[in-house]
Figure 1: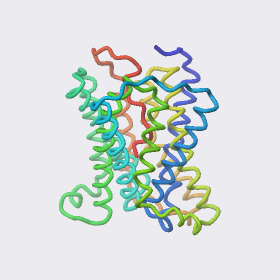
Figure 2: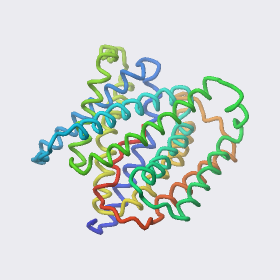
Figure 3: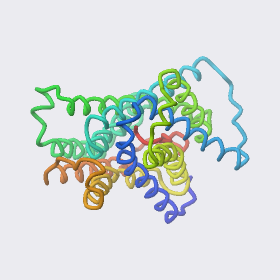
Figure 4: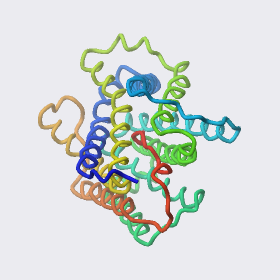
Length: 318
């Protein structure tokens, strides 16, 4: 059950959406100096540290958990696939653009929905099917200039799109594993465990010393990336505590459009900060249609009764 404080729920949901919308634009300046592995290491370790401090300050009491082989298996799956998600999304962003990465990653919640139907026997309503159909139409419109080349050519940009699609698949698998783990863990402590373990996975492959090569702007961008992992997730979790999860998800679905808007403003104010998005009017309409399809799917009620605790406590699809 939620508290019913919908005003606070909206504020927290919009904060989450804004944080995720700024994320790809803030990471772009780092890619010339830091490799994706090192960026991911700092995002996970920094986010984990912030969550740890929050849990410490709030006097969090760890859950009493019975360690089983099944629990360890699901925890391992969640950690490894979230690591794969973070890395592949960042590689995709490196080869494409912020708007493209944010539109394509919307495939992730759709795959999670289908996975929940298969593995958790959740129902799939006609309205949800309509939302998925609208979502697919939106994707086709967004890529209207690249539909043929996506199939026939293996350019760097197209490879980046495939990376983001792979990131969507890995996030959906992570989400399914986390759905199961939330039966035993509290949400924040689970995320702390996952991101901390993820940082340890990336540590041997990362080059933390490269942080010394960053200028002041890049250091701020890296700090924002770490903060984004903790703050966006914290707001998302609290939003679901005060407001229906479906409505929170519908608000968060506007991320691609917000990213486009932020990118447009950036071009007007700081044109040299990063290249402009190469999209036409039909692509912009497609991004909006993707948001509409995601929103309809999120707001559609299935007949399966489920507790709030079984809902996926998302990080940032990346």
